[in-house]
Length: 489
Ligand code: HEC
Ligand code: HEC
Image (cartoon, rainbow, N blue to C red; front, side, top):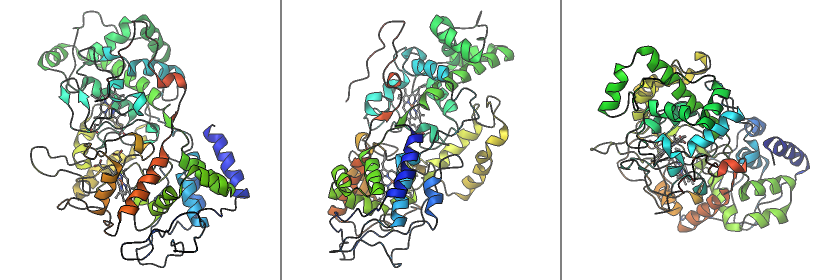
C-alpha cells in the first residue's frame, strides 16, 4: 500500500471507527499498587496526527505530571477502551502518518530514480574502498535491516567507536550520525569512503572508479553531466587520506581539486538518492492501529497479544515518558537527547552531540558550503547550533534512534552496550549513576512485568522495508559477483 492510500484509509477509518478496543489488556500496576499508564494527549489531536516531517516530526505530546488527574488511567477491573486523545496519539505513531519523504533541496537529484539506481550500485561496491573489500553494505546489510548485528562497526582497520545504525526512514532525518556531525544524507555518504578506519578510500579513486566503468560513467553523465578530466591525476589523492594521498592532493592545481571534489559530492548525492528509497513498511502495531480505527476488536486482538497492548499503554503513559523522545511514525523526534549513556571523561570520552558540532561546522560538505545545491537559507538550523553548544545542553546527548524494527537490530545504543531490549528498558529504570543531565525521570517503580510488556510492545514494530525489491539486494554486477555479506559473528 502506498502512503497516500494509507492516508485515505485513515481518513475513512476515522469516520467509521468506534474505537472500543483495548479492553483486553491485563492491568499493570506499579510496585506501589497505583495503576500505571496515564496519558494526556495534545489538545488538538489533528494537529499532531496530520503533521508530517519537514518542518518536522510531529511534536511530542504533552505529558501529564505523574500525579496529575489521569482520566485515561488503566484501572483494574473495568478496562476502558482507547480514549479519543489516546487514539490521536496512536494515529500519530502509525506508519500511514509518515507522509512523503520531505524534499532535500541540498541535493538536486534526491528524487531522481536514475541517480538512485547509480547510488544503489555504488552502495554495494567494495571498489569504493582502499582495499577493494569494504562497501557500505558490508556494515549496512539489507538482510539485517541495514545494520551489521555487531556491537560496533568493523571497518578497514578494525573496530569503530560506535554501533552501526539502520538506514530505513533516513530520508526523514535532519541530522546524521549518533552525534549529528553531518547535516545531509549526501554529505554523510562521503565520510565513510574517505575515513581511514572505515573504507580508507580517496576522492580521486572514487571518481576514477566511476570514470573507468562504462556503466557507471554513462549513468553518472546522464544524471550529472560530464565527468571531470582525470588525465595526469595521481592514482590516489585526497585531503583526508594518508600522508601520501594528502601530499598528492596538495600538489594538484586548485581547479582540478575542485572538479574532482564536485564529482565526489555527486557520488554522495547518488548514494543519498538510493537511501531515500528505503522506508519501513507496516508492522503489527500499524495493523493494530488500523483495527482500532475501524472499531474491529477481533482484528485488533489478532495482531497484538494482551501483553503487547499493555506495553503499548505503558509506552504512551506519562510514567514511562517514552513519547517525549520516541514520537511520530518513526518513533523518534529526530533530535538529540541525554539519557545518561555518554562517556564524559577518560581516553574513550564520547560527548555525543556536543562533540559533533565542531566537525559539522568545519565540514567541507555542510549545508552552508559550496556543494549544497539549494539556497543557503535552507540551512537555518546550522546557525543556531553554536549557541546551543555553548549552553552545554548537548553533552552526552545522542540522536534518538527510530524504534521501528528495533527487536531485529540488536545490539543497542550508540556503542552497542546492550544486547537485549530488556537491558535497554532496565537502563530507563535505573540509569548508570553519575551521568549528568539525564532528561527523563527514571521509572523506579517499573516491575519485571512492566519490562516484559514494553519489550512485547517493541517487538510489534518489526516489518520488512517498503522499498522497490531490486533495491533490497545487491545489484547485478558487470564485474562478476559482489562479495556476499559478511557472515554474522
Ligand atoms: C565499517 C562499517 C561501515 C561502513 C563501511 C559504512 N558505515 Fe555507515 N555507519 C557505520 C557506523 C558505525 C555508523 C555510526 C557512526 C557514528 O554515529 O559515529 C554509521 C552511520 C551511518 C549513517 C547515519 C545514520 C543515522 O541515522 O544518522 C548513514 C546514513 C550511513 N552510515 C550510511 C553509510 C554509507 C552510505 C556508507 C558507504 C558510503 C557507509 N555508511 C559505510 C558503519 C559503517
Ligand atoms: C529523553 C529522551 C528519551 C526518552 C524519554 C526515552 N528514550 Fe529511548 N532513546 C533515547 C536516545 C537518545 C537513545 C540512544 C542513546 C544512545 O545511543 O546512547 C535511545 C535508545 C533507545 C533504544 C535503543 C534503540 C537502538 O536501536 O539502539 C530503545 C529500545 C529505547 N530507547 C526505548 C525507549 C523506551 C521504551 C522508552 C520509555 C520507557 C524510552 N526509550 C524513553 C531517548 C529517549
